[in-house]
Image 1: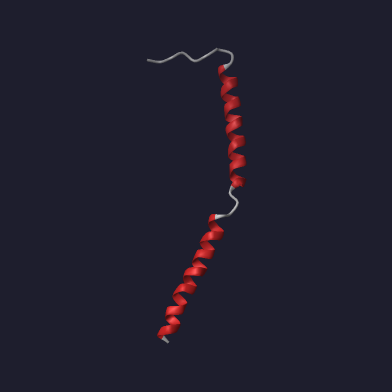
Image 2: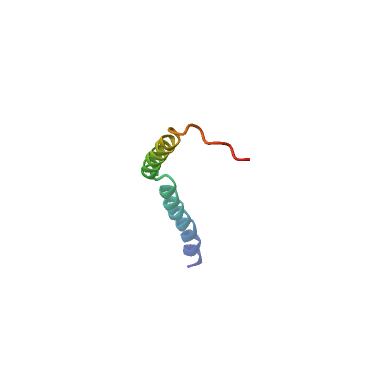
Length: 60
């Protein structure tokens, strides 16, 4: 029975490594596209807000 326990430890390690590997290599680009689009809209809004008055004055 002790030999079976020693064989199960590496088996659990392999299963855990496989789960972690599949989680680490997942596709995470779906959220990036929405964030980049939001950032582009933010930049456009900031450029439009600053356009009529020219550059913002420096505050010392």
